[in-house]
Length: 256
Image (cartoon, rainbow, N blue to C red; front, side):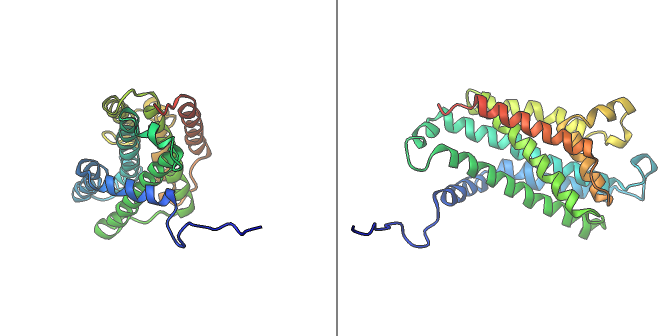
């Protein structure tokens, strides 16, 4: 029997790696998502730091800049997941790119995986930047419970990315996907405390916010920054949203 020849070049990157690199380059060429997802949170953190005084009893004994760090982490994750990911994927489907890839060895599933990987990587990089800027520029303590902080960040990202996939699954085109992502983004960020920190919300509103994805995410991040393991109910809320959104996205996603 003749030996089978392996014609794949040694050390050649896999199709997934090539797709991930291409998607990353495409994202880096878009100044608007990068501004809102990375530059704007840093700018807002600087503003909060400049106007932040000492510990505020109304904010749970925390400084204003320390309160806004987890809110901005949630902001970054939601920006890329709700306003970037759905628009790109729905646009690919609208232009027939997903259908054409489905007939090639690359496959459309690698496109989804590449998109998720790139968005998660950029969001995690921005998160590290927010934490470092807060520490170096304004003396905000690093997360006292690093493992809990990482779990909360990953669960928040998973919930938002799953929601982004669901939007992409239901939207007929990129414009509708972008509009739907924006419509969901603002009320979710309200419950995350972007305009009114959770600590200053009325009791009923604050309690309700913990049952929203970003409200639970911010509370989990705040707990872990204070040195405590995130409350199990908040982590469970994020896990449930991730599961529900992911199942729905799988059920309704169309390639053409």
